Length: 379
Ligand SMILES: Cc1cc2nc3c(=O)[nH]c(=O)nc-3n(C[C@H](O)[C@H](O)[C@H](O)COP(=O)(O)OP(=O)(O)OC[C@H]3O[C@@H](n4cnc5c(N)ncnc54)[C@H](O)[C@@H]3O)c2cc1C
Image (cartoon, rainbow, N blue to C red; front, side):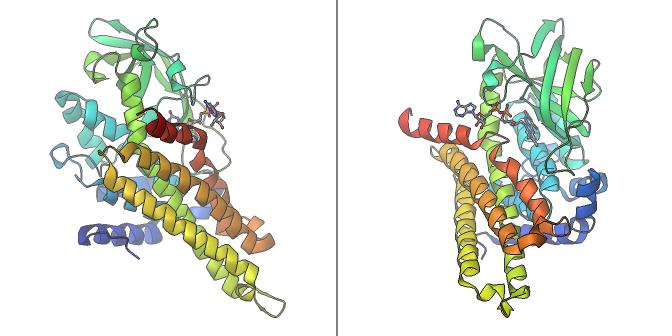
């Protein structure tokens, strides 16, 4: 089922699916077990234009629409959620705010590398003491001539150490609350910038996550995004946009969990018949399929609605529903696999670990519910 994709989007979907099956699937299990970052695959994604999908062509990007982007993320996540998040973070929380809020000079300086030369991007909002309550962040930025000087620490940063550019949010006026926060682009070569020890995670082992440390880190004044004091708004707008990438990641994982359950149920024989003949297994597969179609429809609809009045609410609904449904699907699919599902030899055991974070990062499910209810109760 193509869910109303146009010819161009269908072609892109076929191309990304082929790439994922041929280039990403081989070695998936080993990269997960060895916590190995797939640098070669990332370079190939750069050549294919997958790292700057939404960047206008004048800055070296593919200039594609949001639905094309979520379709590509879904196809990557169906094969490897780690690769999908490496790609989606570059597109949505690094390139997107630079396109939307960067000066012309900054865009011409950094976007061609990110969009066309395979450089990765990252986004530094979370800190050891501030996650959901991002407005309480403590990293500071103080103006010094034609530079800003950053001090502080960011936690849980995807692509840390592999990214060329980091969109970083810091406090520029300690007295002004959320209006005293600004956003900057930090080059990996900036003096005073360092990456900490990578996290040992439950899943997404082929994606790198690590802290960032800023010790009198000097950033050119021209690397400010928007105006001084607009950083919190920029961060929220970025997350409004980027949560669709996580919804798409969840849809991809969900689809694969269903495929694996169907295949296994047809093969595994118990009580003299394939377990697919048992009604309890049929019910479970029907639930997975129904929730998959619902999650995909909502995610695609939210992509088409971006920029409209309902866009922000639909994106939060898609992220909430798709991530929770994908978690349920991985639980059900593993259950269909019985004891084998608990073995690392079976793909479902990796998906079961990888899916867990989809309802946590880029805003937990609880935060999505707050965003949705604010649209209904406060707007
Ligand atoms: C693998 C991974 C990659 C990540 N990548 C990035 C990245 O690239 N950049 C980045 O900036 N961050 C990143 N993060 C951080 C992520 O966005 C945060 O973990 C997330 O926003 C939640 O923040 P927290 O972990 O501090 O949880 P907390 O905010 O401490 O929340 C703990 C629990 O309390 C709940 N809670 C908090 N406040 C409320 C409330 N008001 N009402 C109801 N419930 C509430 C939460 O929903 C959650 O269940 C990443 C995290 C992970 C695990």
